[in-house]
Figure 1 (tube, rainbow, N blue to C red):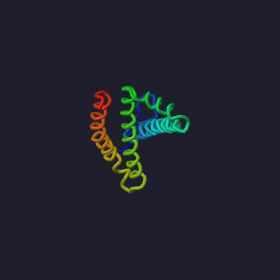
Figure 2 (cartoon, one colour):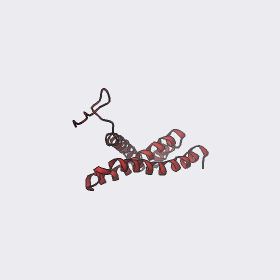
Figure 3 (cartoon, helix red, strand yellow):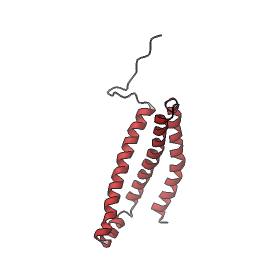
Figure 4 (cartoon, helix red, strand yellow):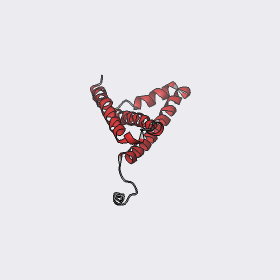
Length: 130
């Protein structure tokens, strides 16, 4: 029986399976986390310049927009961490590639189970003032 040719979405080289999408999401979350860390190091370095300058910058972060951005940061960190563990298993466990789809589902379930309670609690803090 001849093998079925690979079908690709129009206009792309990618097949769209979980491996490709997790690769893309891993890179995007990694870049986002990097830029957060860069800003964090820079604003923390202000302590050496002036405590007042540091306090002023930190004060600008206390608003709902930054609170919502923190939700995105936690989403990125959780996905990046769990997907990184999945990638380690795919690379270093002999059966890893065979269970890639199941592990991706596991990443999604773990992400959801930890992320949803965080969002609920964080939104209460951001908009409730507690």
